[in-house]
Image 1 (cartoon, rainbow, N blue to C red):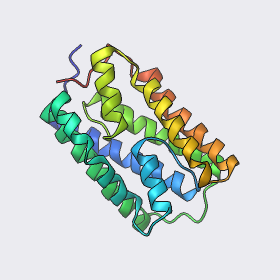
Image 2: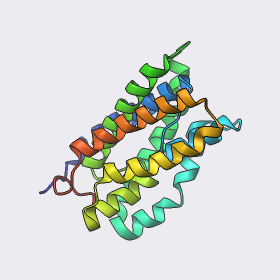
Image 3: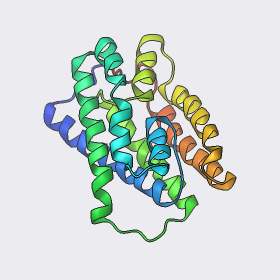
Length: 199
């Protein structure tokens, strides 16, 4: 199936998707929740330092571009670099334009997970990702037919288990709920054979 999109469609989709992801991360952070993947690692590091999520997210993803370039081509790598940069930028700028005094954890988990999942789905369908585990998941799906959503779910579960030292158990359970919703969006809507991230 040919899933290539014209450049204007790619630009609009990537801008929209990265803004959705950044908004989802913003809600998770405001609710005191975590998530999986490189975003989860970046949230953990931001929790323990004065450096913001956006900076950590950008830095953590740098090593994964080598795999993307070697295995998935320069076009995918370029789009992914742009998307990671945009999420990093939007994440740092959203608090300047949106003030939220509190977010109920259940609402944050459900809405944050849904926004990130829909954003990632848009990126996958335009041959891009948010780097990190997403690159590995898309490569394995394209090469071996492994579901990107299921693999991401397994890795995210491991990352959230490590988070026991950071958040109370009930917030961790809600974080898991948000991650499950995120990955179900991918598992239900992005299946092998429908779209391919390979060049």
